[in-house]
Length: 393
Image (cartoon, rainbow, N blue to C red; front, side, top):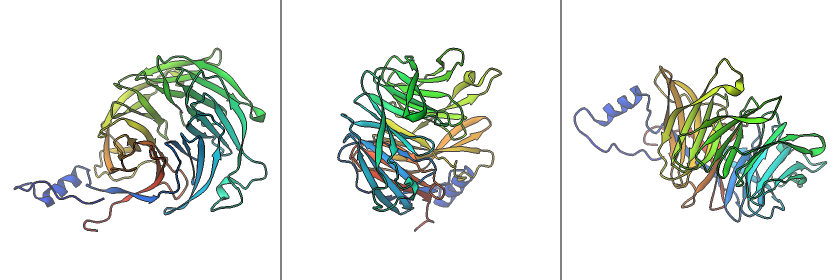
């Protein structure tokens, strides 16, 4: 990232004075930058979504070319294409998700189906595969879930791996229970949204499900053991389609991003009632993108302590990508019960002129500063967020 000169100079506003003010205000200029580290062979058509295997430097991507691709991060500067699976889906593969164990993968398609994949018997453990190791990325489809009337937009495993959620253009959210022998039983079909459902996400510690929709709202769901899954909250405030949602690693916050070019952060406030009835309320809005914001992701290992204000408590770090081609890294800070977000790093033209559709942080030990993006150009790119070099470097 190039250090730009200050745009004006007058008494009281010399560069040194401004730098001191930045430091005192806790706004260290250009404190971090985003470095492109690899751009391996990508998809033949638009790349839709990314998912890192939990705790592993293995990434999977999906595409309009109906395939899923696997990549292995061997160092912060070396990425290997591990293989590609022709899924058999008849239309675009819109979403992919790992089970918590990393032994099962789900793919959701515009052909209205969800395929469940497991590694072929006798294959090497996926996290030991690198380079062109003897077909170590061979997977087989062990189950196909049907039920959505048309395009399936997203798939997600719960934190325990016992439940699967799907959503689609038919305005529905499905909750599936995972049984033995790769069997799945539909527990509930939720029809709370009035329009296309774009995304589903599970709470990291509890069986609480969230969905985002073309109807501009977010719904939260929980299970009633004596009855059925139900919607216990509706979050409103976005002015257009909500494209993506993500719970913070601690589970206290929910981030959402929208066609309205904003990111909203929602906070959880426990009440005397059950967890399912805890109150979720708007906390702050992050503005800076100049186009629809398509994807957001929390850094799994928390935040950088880049802020100099001792009165502000860092609560998390969020990456966002947009049709404007920009990647932004936001640090969220809490001060006097007020949450705010600051951009600590950004890069323009991340995929050239193409929209950036997905962003995902790596959770593997030693790779916590690495993230990946996918774009309309079909490419998957790997980035490292690092503390910016000293001035003049």
